[in-house]
Length: 285
Image 1 (tube, rainbow, N blue to C red):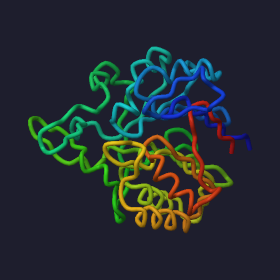
Image 2 (image 1 turned 90 degrees about the vertical axis):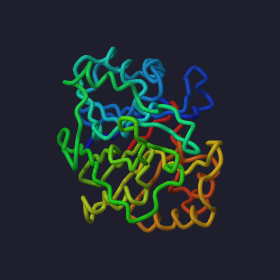
Image 3 (image 1 turned 180 degrees about the vertical axis):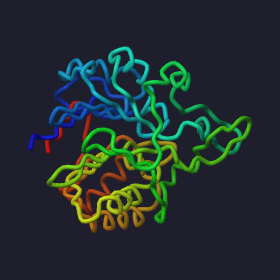
């Protein structure tokens, strides 16, 4: 069995010894295994593609892409990806729910979605997924994520604009990838707006009795307005870490919207089972 190699093309931070790479508030991962090359999210801009060149990743050879949800920091680089790659389908969650906005105090709001004109410009490339779909052998997109556990507190300022009406965003457009191998699963999520514990339990329900070799992505535990602070109480975060620790997860890699303070709390419980994935880092499984 060949190694799964996951390269962080962009994230909020970068490796200290790679000043040539750009970091931004966003996520983009390149995944290579067997004969499959895929991209998960495209960051907030085209910078992920510039980093890809410096990291030896050929975006033109990518076979498929996936967008975790419809926010700009995960789909902002889509237009650049389509310039670099002329064939790969890109899968994403439902596109008929509304336009993503952040809204504070019921008055102040701004658009935080990706450029939806791309849906009309590339109807044969941007392909919505509902439920569970095997995209290529061994790679599954999951969009059905029940929420028996709390969702991140930061969701409370996120809305969908439907015509002239704003409704709370329940993130039915969120998508995660599961790579299924003989020795376990690799789970990749973007921001875990449906709740990282809910996401893990959705994967366990879909693939019972299989270990999660790696859980990779943002957990959206940062506070407001500063992304370095934690959302929720320390006690809540410690309980979340204990709950995650009860699941069959070998290693977890997190960053982006998790937040520095929340990461330290989770790490105090999970220890070496949890680490970060800054721009330029490589995970080999």
